Image (cartoon, rainbow, N blue to C red):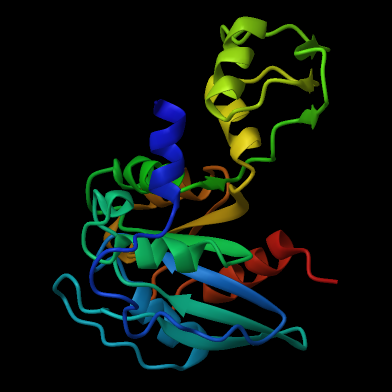
Length: 259
């Protein structure tokens, strides 16, 4: 049942409303980056600072209601930057415009998660949970697992490395049965969880790099800025003061590995 519910969650809703204006954004340029974050963390201001495109910004929440595109020109490469409407807790289950936001985010080559360090430090975990729920995996590689369907012999299970997350042949067979797979060769080349295996079976997950951008560092002390700057995949900036925007662009270039 858990497998079926996960699959239903990842499928587009067919009830009510139809398409939402502002989300049919044509992909142009050599790469696409999506700005995600809670309302009023500075996404719109960051879009303007990096691309010159005016996205409505104000000191209150939910100012951005549609997906607004801009273009970054860097090292002779065109990078499309999308300012997505602010995510809220519960977006993955359809609250606000969460489903539309996340569907657009899945089309991106890199995610910029904009965070406000002056607010509670649960933002990153909450946003990651919302994205995980809709099939987006941040800063992770696909599990090294192969499932090859066969015409007989049932489920043949081969774990090349020791499994430490209670994932064994019985659990494997139970999950595959839910997907009506009764004959297959399963090879595990790394230690995985049940969720990892479901990701492989569903085969519709998006694995993408995410850079965490801590904005408004002009409101923090030096020690806190230094701590944030040392976190993995993190960049500290102040859009209002135009601090470290060049450093952010260089980091994006490095992570996207555009040849």
